[in-house]
Image (cartoon, rainbow, N blue to C red; front, side):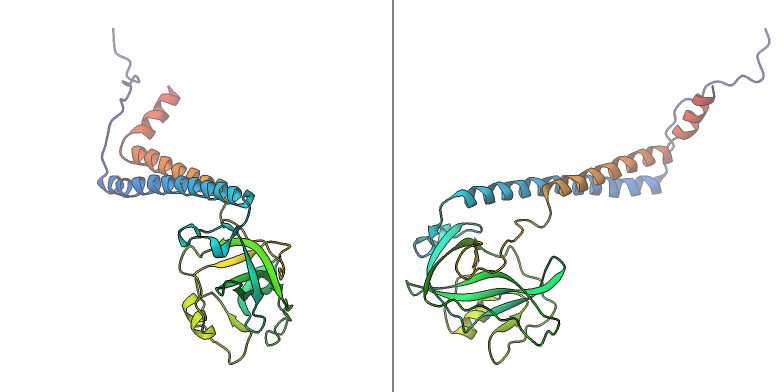
Length: 252
């Protein structure tokens, strides 16, 4: 019986290495997987931070003057009794809320124990003329304030060198505790107390606990893993006859 001249044996899958594409995949596939795992780890860290924040918010405020240094952690709920130094306010510049430019007002507080602490009283709107500073309400007498202890998680970003005015209030971008302590001639701890909404001296309070939600980190991880999968598939197609084999299989 004569063989059918149009009949072709089915082509088998063959590996045809392309070393350039293999090198590309070998470099970037582990990188994308590592970035995806890193984003998942960041999501877990943010969830733990949120959980810790909620737990500390529910705790009664601890007197700051009685709190050991080892327990003065970020988001610890504290109380402090003392007097505001209304003559030495600090305005943290470039603080925007609801699209409006403004400042965060930080005022030194002398506790009844003689210790000093910087109190972040919250946000106040700025005017159209940056040369005119907002009026900061003065808080006379001895008061008891409550709030959350806050330490900056890292070196703050600065747009340039800070310029200190000859008179107060000062307008600066970030709190440098050593410089402020030197200017005031007082010892200061390396944290602030962010006031609770109804505490004496509070302005517009409320600060985000985290800048990126855990769900967004998870979404980033999915994107990196999808890219890793795409690299793997493209690498297989570029180094084999898989594309031709699939097309021929579809025709037959």
